[in-house]
Amino acid sequence: MDVTHQTDNEQTALWNGRAGRAWVESQALLDQMFKPFEDLLAEVARAGSWRRVLDVGCGTGGTTLAVARQLGAKGHCTGIDISEPMIAAARARARQEDTTASFIRADAQTHAFAPASFDMIISRLGVMFFDNPVLAFANLRRAASDDAGLRCLAWRSAAENPFMTTAERAAAPLLPNLPARQPGAPGQFAFADRHRVASILEDSGWAAIDIQTIDVECTLPENALTGYLTRLGPVGLILEDADERTRAQVIDTVRAAFDPYVHGDEVRYTAACWMVSARAPSASGAPKEAANV
Image (tube, rainbow, N blue to C red):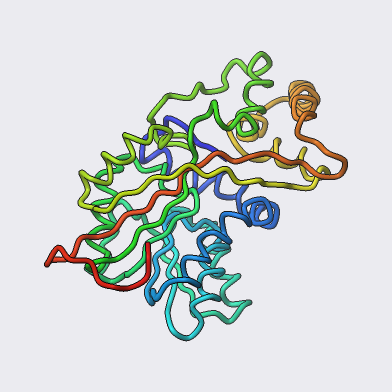
């Protein structure tokens, strides 16, 4: 589920190619696994008075649609993602639900949003892939109205998320071309350093920054584990081009490495994340008495 140390153009190509297709194919599984994150962000809409919400890195639209359901007729949720296949899947889901949610296929880092067009910006694990995060969050600040809220979920470090690196650690001796992670580079754990995240937000014009640790219990069916590890993440991408012998050997080795997380017919792990909150400062400098960020 991670694409590390890629340039912006490489990220675009990958998420519009193999990685994007894999996420679409795994939509139901990923939505189930990340349902706790979806619920956390939907609560923002339920508890607040927001009317115009932007979901950054929306993928196949699960969180966008969940927030749209909470807003109902009183508001609108827009999802943005760089991946054409994922946005196409999100739009198809929106048509099936007959929802008011809408989707933009674009790079949130540079997209020309209408100024001050959103009063809440959210993201479920989608803001760690920017090539230039200060530029990206400055662009989102321009899209935010005065006193708009920001609420993002992002992974903490790889060391705190061993489940997410189990496949590559187990497969590394068998796949010499497996790319090594580079700290701070665009990818799953780019926001591991809390101080770096705060600095990015400060430099891009956000205020009232609050970064809290959260540990979220996630699950997936045991019978979906092999598909998960062979389709997603750096190991899944390399296995697409592996010969049958190597593929079989890697699958056996990696699947065994996940045994500590298997409990009967369920796989369980703890996702170590940040809950990042901030606010767009108003022209007057005084916050409105509205909903909490």
